[in-house]
Amino acid sequence: MRKSFLLSLAALTLFAVSTLNAHAADAVPSVGQSAPTFTLPSQTGAKISLKSYRGKWVVLYFYPRDMTSGCTIEAHNFQNSLSQFEAKHAVILGVSVDSLDSHKQFCAKDGLTFHLLSDTGHKVVSEYGSLGGYNGVAIANRNTFLIDPKGKIAKVWVKVNPRTAASDVLAALP
Image (cartoon, rainbow, N blue to C red; front, side, top):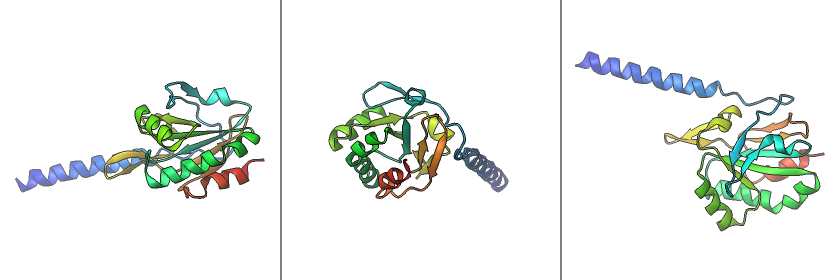
């Protein structure tokens, strides 16, 4: 019995390590690389495609959860700076693994008018090397990508400070 327990434990450990390694393989895109393309639904239900923003700067920010303290601070700072981003021909797209209903509630509760995109399948979060976990639940890591008008990654921020994210990105825009 002890032997079967140890074999089961070893198999579980190997599975856990392979899962972690699979997530580690999801590398963060580098500056100069073409931004991975995507189409995801926004809080309005509209499908939003990265390619539709060619010719504009795109602030693509990944965040863990709707209506949590850090995510709310970060979203408010982007919302409060929205006119400054628009003046620099930049759009803001927030992405999490939360549902459309959660995004709708977050936008309504907090007066957010930019697009929050739902990636419940974790495809885009993974392509941007931003899939994480908390207490066994998949979340998006707090990473931000500035994508230039030609669709290339211009700047990358990982482990973003939600209090300074908007001002950091604004300072990087030409």
